[in-house]
Length: 159
Image (cartoon, rainbow, N blue to C red; front, side, top):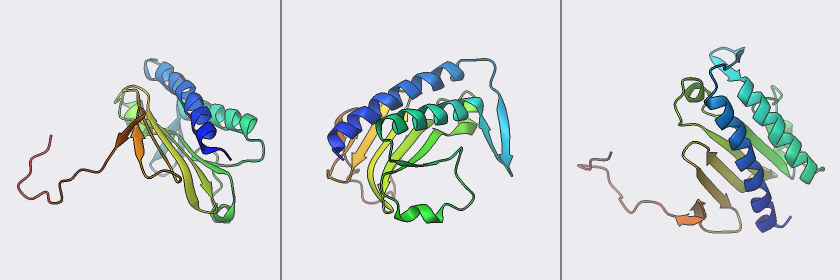
């Protein structure tokens, strides 16, 4: 798989999925459902999950999928699969449901348990993070990002 091409294609799909989330975010009608325990999801979770899976399946018909909304109770057998798309269509559902804009679409391509490509998109702030196994750098909106040089937090004040 050509990771340059795949990354570009997935970013385009994720941007479109972000538009779906934005539409739901500003809506006054946010349907939710119980997933058991304290976990819940919204109609936005389902819609974006279906959209992402459908678009990726169209581009990569042989791929496998593990999504938060459709995951089996035991997915341990998936650890040895190639071309496994791991998707959280709405990472931060509680924030989303409270109109807090700290939520994201998280998606990764994994081969035999090893991540190959990862994309995290925050639609409201328009921040697109990406990383690939064949590159040493991670990116934010196409610009290289790096780890802070601060090695100790003693006496440091952060905002």
